[in-house]
Image 1: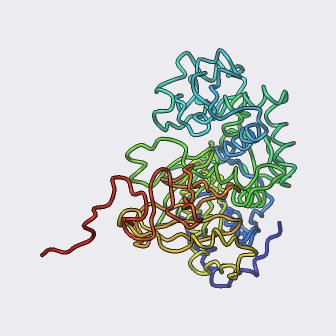
Image 2: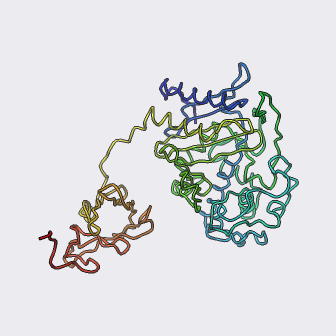
Length: 461
């Protein structure tokens, strides 16, 4: 991936630079680097620093904290796609005796396994991982605080368990597996478990004075799968492309789409905030735009990766301070600036390559009771069904190759759609999960459940 700044308009580039300059100045951080991705490659890189005459470039490493969890989730989903495990399997099946074995793999990925947020003992992010050499040291005597599967409760020990699961099933250290299966195929050669020169130092900035204190950079040991990694804006830009489009060398587009779907029960406050959690990815409604990605923090560093799949724009923000600017807010703003200043140009309309006439005759208006819907043909033999009013249940359906379709989203996800034909071959109605859709409201010629009043439609006389 190459940085092609000329692809953005000068006014857009200036707006991006202004946003990170404000973040660095008001957030009082020693340095801040950022990148924007559009159409599958990096189109802008920016940096602000307190050091005169020097600005970190796209290859300078920063610690990325919990963005590491997304990498760990990718490894687990690779195991699922290979058939080595099922996401519904309890952890106990593979790692017996942890005390948290009733949680499923999916629940651990979505932080709904009921585990504590942190490890017991001294602050694990500022102490050596050697203090917690075994899983029991990470989990403590009471690893579960909530019933598994009942609520979203962010858990660093939960991702430690997932890292241990990867090691058990691959027979190799987590970082070795990560490099072989994810980093090398995606070309992320500046992402590592330990810092590689050039890299930024981590700092704490005094809340009431413009002075700094160096932060320790500890090896997290067993907890590495929850937050160990160092990376760059260039590498994370490539990773953002992967999380948007997939890469069959690592995970398919279908699996990364699954990662981006909500997978954990939401708290009431999360519903209000428009926040959810998928399989290793945070999901947020921000100023009317759906964003996915992950934030990260460790003493001395803040990081964020933000993606708007609909706009095909992503942003990376990395800083080297313990607290200061809000990287998630900066990332969301960078995405918004590009998406609004230079809206995505849609692909040209093209006719379908081929069409089945028996499916084409299904296109058009249908009624569920008195609710009007439109059925449209889509690429690959699929169809879509949506209410004409703009409100109500809607879904795309993939073809099963036998004259039936399966719903892909919303209320109809997994439900079966089929056209029911009369003995003469004409279409009687559509059956969608037992619902009858007819060409006319309550068509008396179709088997509408409960029948149709023989008096027919009438006014008030």
